[in-house]
Amino acid sequence: MKTSKARAVWLDYLRSFITLLVVAHHAALAYPTFAYFNPAHYIRSTAPVVDGSRWLGMDRFIGFNDLFFMPLMFFISGLFAYRGLDKKGVKTYLTDRFIRLGIPFLIAELLLIPVAYMPSFYLSTHSTGFIPFATDYIHNQQWPAGPPWFIWLLLAFNGIAGLIFKFWPHFFTSVGNGLANLSRHPINFCAVIYGLFALSLIPLSLWVGQYTWVGNWGPFDFQLNRLLFYLLFFLLGSCLGATDWQQYLFRNGKLFGKVWWLWLALSLAYYVLVITVSTFGENQVKQHNLTAIEGYFLYDLVFVASCLASISACLSFFKQKINVPSAGWTSLSDNAYGIYILHYPFVTWLQFALLGVSLPVSLKFLFVFLVASSLSWLGSRFIRRSAVVASVL
Image (cartoon, rainbow, N blue to C red; front, side, top):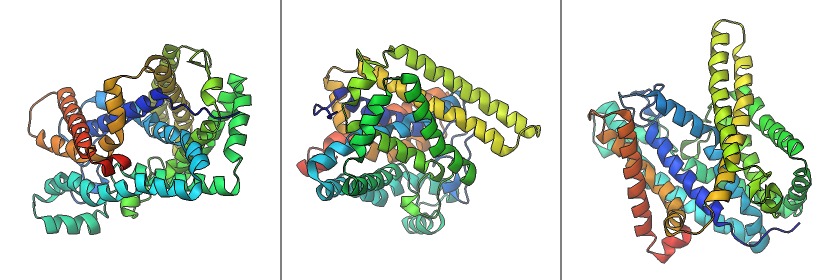
């Protein structure tokens, strides 16, 4: 089964939407009830800037986002990997990936992410000196990675895909065709996919701990317990992208023949289940009816299901509803990568500027999100006027 050569505009628009979710996620991190700031080591805080105003609604938004938006980013990125490898060859493809991913990563880590953490240093020390900041940033905070962690990890995953393609050229098409055959039986397909992702997440999470980052890797830090989880999403995308996956997963334009709102309802139901199981497990552990490992095991089981349901809802909605080219979506799509690179300093400095302002959390969040998104969008459009920059971003 051959892969379709036509680029799906709805996928570009979905990737753009997820980029906005990333900005919104970071804008919200200053305001959840679980937020805390560690002035001695601000890198250990939940966010670079933590506001005294809190709202449970931010907890729910952050929790829902965290279930699926980064796995979906890796999945969509993987969809285009095989096509690039098959067209360009391994060496040219990986060289192109280094230019498109490696160079922006280095620029962001050297210039943009330090600026994003300057408010953290001031909140910790009330100092505005650059030399003290730089010394603390590198030695005490160990060079925080910030959002570009995704970019370098994606580059590493592309390297893995390149190695697979070099030594096992038919891997992606073979697995993709196997998935195509399995998709004729949707229940079996979903069960296999769920089982694989559960195995990629749960054992490692129970071993190293939930939400565990490597630490001490500086700008190359990443979330250790989700490493295999993210890699599997990328490889799944790569295998599907090696075939005409839209033809067999979408029937009459609908994911497994089901309308988008059913997938959305399922994703919301699973998120309610995640909250319920999380609360139940926490209470049972406190009452010594469950061990911490058992509680986290139950949580991870529903986490994987909720993640897959939310990804399915996004794919289904954009395939059915956001599939006609439009100027606004196209501009957002063209600048999505630039927005991802540029947004973090805008977010943290806007949060810092609002610390002493008496406003409802919802308004603070909306202000930070809208202004940071707009400035990043405009900034991306401005720098992409250069043909050299546009070829990278």
